[in-house]
Image (cartoon, rainbow, N blue to C red; front, side, top):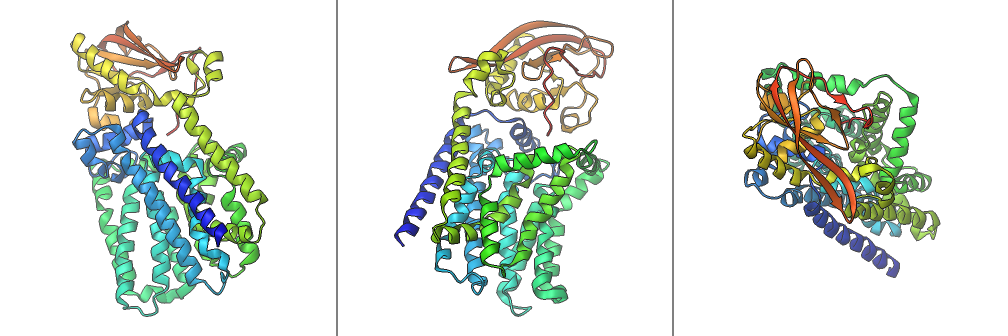
Length: 510
């Protein structure tokens, strides 16, 4: 018992420290490219958007409307992260209770704390805890799906009041998940898999099922209405984006390696032990992990999967891994558990340290302006926005221009309400918000050292551009990046971005 209390205190301490660290970094760092893009959703409230459903914008509408700071807005993902952990801990308790014949072990009384530790030791979960992305919404909604599925599975009678209540809540969870991200359907497949495994086709006789589906479908109406009004551009974009490019096996290996780095091996170690000790475990619940994970892995071969997309799947796996870890620890099989916990928490701590100092100092020393330093992306944008507003007044032009959407989101957020025009041939959300730069007009063009382009002085571009200012971002003596400002005149038409030959970083992939 003493060991159990000690382990509980350790996990609770890590949880408390994580809350404090997330709060500090929420106010310290500028928005990432995706955070700024989704904050602009709230700034330009709509039924849906070009590249994602609307919930990620709706949920931050009030702090954006009140013009609150980035740090206050980031309290939303921090709260969602806490909800994710609490629901996952509750799933663990339910698993042990419902399937107590399989999990009849005193050591499993602490399994919920092991669930929390698995999530706390996954580095990328801390990224989602600070930055509000659609996946941040899903790490709270997917475990809610699982918990409700478990509760519904316990219902013995079709008209049981609490059964209907759970079906109604599940309908709202499914609807909100669809409003969060289109790929939520991959996780929702686990619900019919489990319910049909436990109840067979009788599940379709439950009135709650049809009420659930009706609520979920009703909540998705804004997506369908907006797409109907906008020629289905969001669906077309997602189908094209999901297909990816040329398929390569090497990308799958890279994707899987990134998964290990981002989420660690604690869950895998725990799952192995769980199914060695408890062969009658509720395997169907693992569909919440395997179905989306396999789909995203296959998509990665075409270059269209990002590491954090699988986050809700790893959340779904955590309670099962926790069962094995709790049992192994009680049986004094602790060596590899200690190793993986130390490595993963050490990686989390190293990540926060690099974030605070602006990257690895040796990188900046040997690389001009830290071109290979990804952390440079999180510093300097708020100052740049202020500079753009000053230059706009000085040169009497309200137009801002960039040559890639990844530059546009931070520019539009920190220099608001000035319109930002993206000078490329790619249709995106900025075309819907700001339209096209008027022919013959002038604009202040922003160029950034981490993603530099040739000046758009050519046919169907600007007649001339001249440098008017520059801003170097420095942290603890290291130059992280440089922003250059140009006054460009007489816009003639659409331009193709031209990356500088000596600055050939790869374009960020959303």
